[in-house]
Image (cartoon, rainbow, N blue to C red; front, top):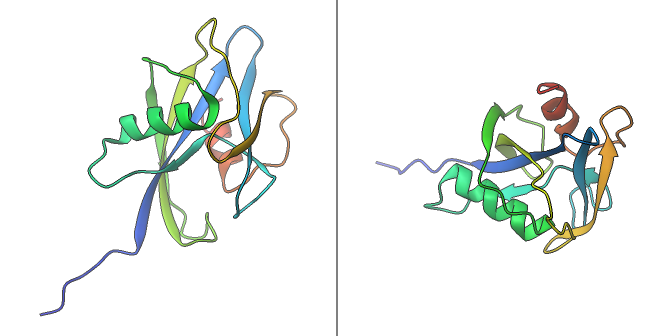
Length: 134
């Protein structure tokens, strides 16, 4: 009897909103796929890791933001959303907490706030994630 091994991976994405300025925080990707494109902070869930903890970890690793308030906003799993393979992303939303120093870290080349009314072209299906929550 052969053992089935799934080829589907789980990722997390985080929508960070500054409610005062009505802006969304995006990262410029350091690596392929979509190198130098803007995207939501996020990444792969580690084996044995809780989804929300993965979202918090990725957010901190890429933007230096720590948050205690995080809400799951949906799952996104169209088979071709990521050129690396079949990825299912569980998306979260959080609001910026005052006095946080936002800076690019890990595999983020740059971080920048964008008006919700003037977003750049985004990697993956991140515009769908944002639009599903506005």
